[in-house]
Amino acid sequence: MTDSDAMLRSARSCASGVRWKASVQRFEIDKLRWLASTREQIRNQTFKGRGFKRFDIVERGKLRHIQSVHISERVVQKLLCNEILKPVVYPRIIYDNTASQEGKGTELALKRLVEHIRWHFARYGKEGGIALMDYHDYFGSIPHFDLGTAFLLLLDDERIDYFIRLFLDAFDGDVGIGLGSEISQVGAIYYPTPVDKMIENQFGVHCHARYMDDSYMIHHDRQYLAWCLEAVEEALDFFGIEMNARKTMIRPLTDDFVYLKKRVHIEDTGRVVLRLTRENIAEERRRILLMREEYDAGRMPASSIWQSYQSWRGYAKKYNGYRTVGAMDRLFADTMKGVKF
Image 1 (cartoon, one colour):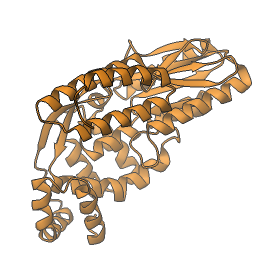
Image 2 (tube, helix red, strand yellow):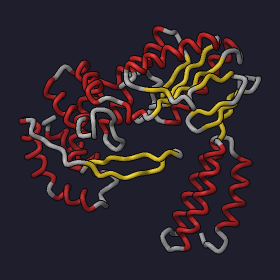
Image 3 (cartoon, helix red, strand yellow):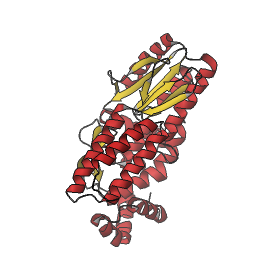
Image 4 (cartoon, helix red, strand yellow):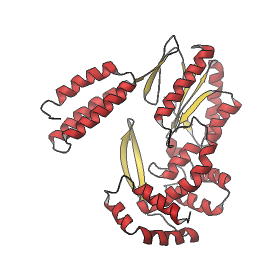
């Protein structure tokens, strides 16, 4: 962690895309002096955090509480994660754990879901079902000590353990890691990996994937699927994670279901159709009305409105939303009367 080139790589990565911020500009001006002093603090294990900047955002329809750290601390976290944790952690997670990783993401998660359904359909048709699993307050449920111990078992280095515990224990209490810190993302990706491997290796469920706190299992025997789901709940309880009873369910493959905000339909031919949910469509309607209000108040230029809407149109078409796009085009035209694009 004290390699100068690695520290500078981390600093450049953290500043990328946010150099317009005053705090980032001040950091970059004094970057070399920061590097020298921080390298000594890391060697002596005297480095301390500067606390969090807390704010809320709405992501995928959910209110999320963000705890962001100052760039000087974020650089050290990124250094720890990119140079030490990720090279050790990521090779040990299952392939179909697709959140917050370069080259993966929601697109790969949905692509893999389609591939799993096709694999299942080729052997069993629509026989069986899918167990949809959602972890309740996932980030807020992860114990600091247990996550730190899980990392330590992989690394077996007390010097690294010091920094892991420092960043984890910065969050309030003994349980719960906040969004906005890179170590939280790496920890949330890795923490229930033993449960993921239990599903695939011990239960023999071929069609299984997890995207952070959303996961699924597909099997041709729905009774066996119910048993697996019960066993998974017991295993997660050991890790301090609780299932969301409202969102965790077993659905027959003859019915539509929702995964990662997409409605999934399996045709009798085995073709898998992904569409936007009503929630996605309602959210875009609200956004159009809000953009008009922002435009009238002089806070949003017409060019930004146009770019935002065209981005959504392309997204909707990708998920077979052609009729939805037509209806939304009419709403957009009516709402934006008088706006020159």
